[in-house]
Image (cartoon, rainbow, N blue to C red; front, top):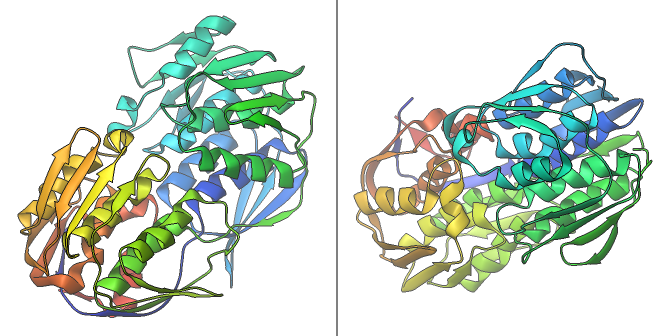
Length: 421
């Protein structure tokens, strides 16, 4: 689907979708509890659907109910061993795949994991090394499909922390239910540690104890139980980033549903935008107003999902912006460093790729044209966010890619005054 935008100031009040990262975690914790748990305020998306699909396959019973405050999911938890080989479709969700592979082993199911898009290209080597060490049977030709059969034992788990924190989250969910105590240790510096902190917070609220001894070193008592209950999901700062950028580019955006005390690493968007001279008001709601922004240095190591939004804003900000430590941004739904460089250049941006980042010399405005989303939700939303600073219509090819995480994005865009032709 192609969408053509006639640039207009964007102004309005929007409730930000629930955090996709937190929703994955809440659903998994609920599925591991014995009994019924309610997860409220959920924003449905293709990635969340993938997690629900596989948790259901593993034995959890999940029902949906629309309410005034959003979607509510009731999860009757408990993983069960199935007699047949299970085919688990993770869609394009890296979180779903990496979080749930240990759960398949916990339930002792024989599972074939599949996916679409670039998911089969995203690294799984840390799990392969664990399978070899723990004598877990698996078959793959590299990537997906991946066939796994065996049982997740308690014990020592060592893996690199510079590939993805998602491997740590998957093991942190599963090992408390193993038949003994375990140790999880990173053999390198643990990158994107804020995501692991979100996992630890979720586990704590669901009654599971993890002893963090140091960064990347966790002692995990076995034989634990997950607690049932009612758990709301907070708003997603990585999605708020696009509306904050749009407000600074031209207009005034008021965002609701975000937690001031959130542990999301992507909450760092507020500090980055303020460092660029952005007018950001905090306290209850978050407000972003038209600002004369300037360049900055962005360290993407722990906040890779913010790169498209910051790259877009930097292209229409005064001076130089340098994005550093962004190697892993190339391993997302697309190579986001390359995609943003290519697409912004089509609109007249001065942008140059480095192996680990981007150098952007900002301009007052860009010109219209036709760009591609690269079938990546964050590329599409980042390009749309700066349309108040684009002179001429902008056509985004593959605009339906937003369904992966934010299906109502274009409806919200129109609600904020955006004009779709």
